Length: 198
Image (cartoon, rainbow, N blue to C red):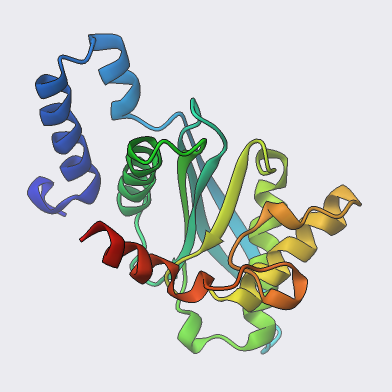
């Protein structure tokens, strides 16, 4: 991918321009140019045909100075760490501009969910959470749905997290179904926010 098309390089360039305009001190500028924490994981999944496929995933906790990392989980065959980094950076800045007590995060798995059965998707969702569980929590990192992840996938993830920690934690995941603590209006919240901003 060329540097001018690399989403993370674009995000860094935007930050550099903003830092110069704001007169941001060098240490703060450098801290905001890179993720605070970046996790790369492998997730073995038993497929319906009996084989085991290993999926590669990421979670970027870009900055948690203002609160827990917040951001979606993307499942896409062309997912890249640079896209996930950029989206986590932009989430950090969006929550700061809106003065929300949240940091920025984003996750991804390289997979083609359109070609996967419900059982395979469930096993992938649970494996993703098992790999990341020690780094998640309402005071650490709260994932949400994004590209090709659904309320059902969020439900499986929340269930897996609660199974691991042996406690109820409905706040660990947003975007889950209403019947297990999801929010009314969540499905169209991003579009509604766009209306208010414009």
